[in-house]
Length: 421
Ligand SMILES: Nc1nc2c(c(=O)[nH]1)N[C@H]1C(S)=C(S)[C@@H](COP(=O)(O)O)O[C@H]1N2
Ligand SMILES: [Mo]
Image (tube, rainbow, N blue to C red; front, side, top):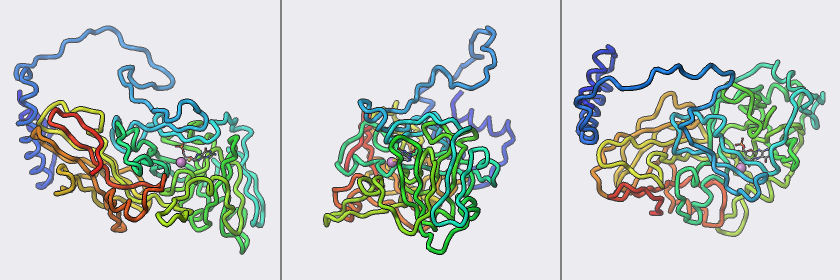
């Protein structure tokens, strides 16, 4: 049976209700797949019930593991210094928009501390009326919120400044992940402590050996910032800051201080090591731009990815992720001809603000050379810049905050490579 007839058979049998427009799209797609895929599977015309054993399966178990056939893994960037290192999320092997906690990227400056939640405390002090100390259980008793947010290291895509052709989407752009985070709004803790008139910034400090610390402006601290203890329905993973971390939505990952132990309310930024020696952007005139907090809109095609090979001409769904630190993704456009023409991709609903948003575009590849690009627009109207426009504005001195459009070249043999255009 041809796949096109399978598709329409399925829709009738299931009695699916479709709107006129999506039904039309569906039928067109059915035609495209039918033509493109039937050629690949000639034997399916007389398929019979699949063979298979009926041996008793595995027993139940208390904590789940993925199938032994699945191999997607984080990749270590700097294996010789595994405690001052990072691992990259295999973006090109994931579905949907939530990153499994076990594949969330990691960035540690001084290793992962082993913290007993029964003894861990969070101190709030400085320019407050009532300095407070919270246990983890006390934090969990307070009003909670759960939100889906991306977290991106500002060093993500850093090698793109230097024109390095990364061998896959994970190596090039895997310092971004997306989880549902649960915690108590930081505003609740600060209001409980009572802010004094001079209070303007909060210095957050981690309990890791390096005592990582960053200054956070009070306005953001009082808006959507969380003191998070939950990730994707369970406790944070140790690598993500167990038992509590700061979570500053839409801002560069470094400010979301893990293993949070202290919030010092102050009147100015404290110029900590982590916000002066790193995470500043060296501009073309030689001056360093500090406090580039917001991660601007960005998108990347994850399927196909460089380093992979298209199995052959015909139907392919181009898939990728888009996100913006300023709000929702409004639109993603995909080009298959190196940016000459663009088509609007489908966004998987609901595309929440400050979250990875999955986009998809139906594509029938004719087997000739193609250059794939994606370009996103966020709800503020900001358009992801071309690589050339980004370099024009920022020069080539930077390591951080690269959100330029990426290009994947597909060769007639199906191989895919990262190219600069
Ligand atoms: N205490 C502490 N917090 C930290 C770090 C760290 O090394 N120590 N790394 C920061 C950096 S640079 C990033 S990008 C994010 C990474 O968070 P993740 O490891 O959960 O992905 O945590 C930030 N918070
Ligand atoms: Mo980072």
